[in-house]
Amino acid sequence: MELLAFESLLARNKDWAAQKLHTDPQYFDNLAKDQKPEFLWIGCSDSRVPVEEITQSPPGSIFTHRNIANMVVHTDLNVMSVLQYAVEVLQINHIIVCGHYGCGGVKAALQSQDRGLVNKWIRNIKEVYYKNREELEAISDENLRFDRLVELNVEDQVYNLAETSIVQKAWKMRDFDIHGWVFDFRNGQIKDLNIRIQKSEDLHPIFRYSY
Image 1 (cartoon, rainbow, N blue to C red):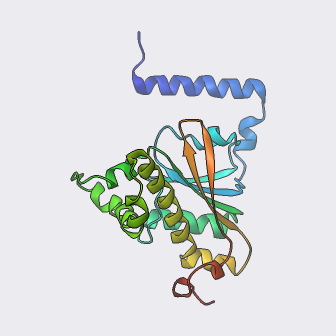
Image 2 (cartoon, one colour):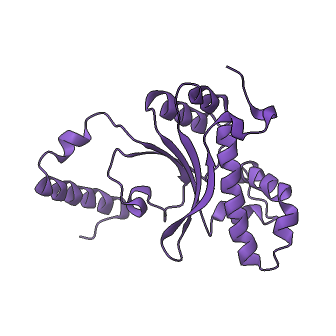
Image 3 (tube, helix red, strand yellow):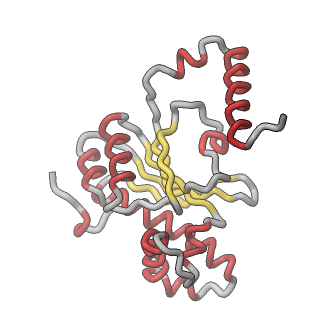
């Protein structure tokens, strides 16, 4: 009898667990211990970007938050809660915002189609476009313009992180970095956008908090 789609997931899980135990009988005992990740990864919900796989990282090394178009919205309690837990409790050393070329959320922001509730989310990306409209509209090739907006959106989210009181308060206690990356489906590689923020002094004074 052919398995239903969800049943095949459960079956593959059993196979995976058996393979792990065969390779390392202590694998799940070690996995059950407290996590000590070095990285917080804020990425897109796109199912084609498996974080641990594309970075060849073991379980427990990357604390992950994903949403449409890897956004950091200050009023989003979900991402803010993840951020606070990562920097205050887990004491991560690096925060990575990783977008990806061909992002559906970014593409939707380039269009005028009414997408219901999603409109409210991608409005933030439209603001990124508007802020950078002179650069973007000077790019005649639509695909290259799309790619560039993906990069600019990542850059904007990196600064959104640095501008939070959560991050700036943590910087007073210890050092950690915020990075901007983009994953490319076309070659499987991650592009470092060379965006790196390490302290409040990297920000415009209007966004700095005093502690």
